[in-house]
Length: 354
Image (tube, rainbow, N blue to C red; front, side, top):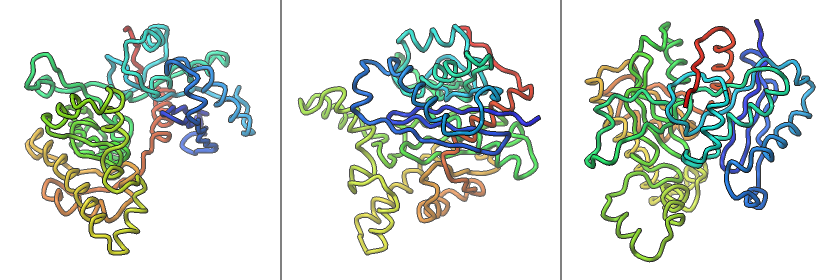
């Protein structure tokens, strides 16, 4: 059966929506929200009505009637505790998001916007492969401070989708392969997928620096910055997540611009870009021992994986672990749609109980 699925993916300053007929994307809109629009709202959760209205207005551009929808799938955010896969948006899930106990993040709104659109139509609203999906091994949670327990925040949605795609390409099920997946975008995370389960990961502020994030910095430096009197908590957080990485060094987050500078002979741009690849390679190598080096492939994905220069440098350093496969793009909309279709086709759906 050919299902019609609407996908909703809220980001910090945008809400992306897409309409799929089966695997075919028939409509996509990136609705950008300027800072003035969002600053009217004291909390991220207060943006639900505004973003839902913007999505419905954008859908008026389509010739497909809303009453032909079979499901709406929203991005799953920092919701805990959840497993990978699909969850029906129920009262318990909505209460958890609205309760104010979750890490504030625009992706948390995915479930609420999806439900706001789906409920009047009498169709299910789902989330799929939420950011905080947790299958991490117990030993991987332990840190050097008993009161600090590692949480598995990473690019679960895209890394699972690309692990599935790789498995299909070699004629296997996702549950039959072991892969290391590095998502390289505004943030960088690396995941270990062991036969269908993400058993360990490096979160996007716990490893390599990225296009806009500082990554791991020796704690003594961070402590000095925090108590220097030059930063508020919000200001230092923004410096580390949003104003760090390649952007901090080169003043741009556009990797095409960085590559143009390199082509024009900019030695510093080349050094920073190669350091970016070097750190990602170290992140992949850091997780290699988790399965004793027993991997079918190393997968490089995310928007920055479109850069051949970058992926070639990484491949040179990590191909000793396993063959390197490059599957570029964030692929979030496609991954959400495919997840929704699997649920409509009978894949078991989790029930959130709080």
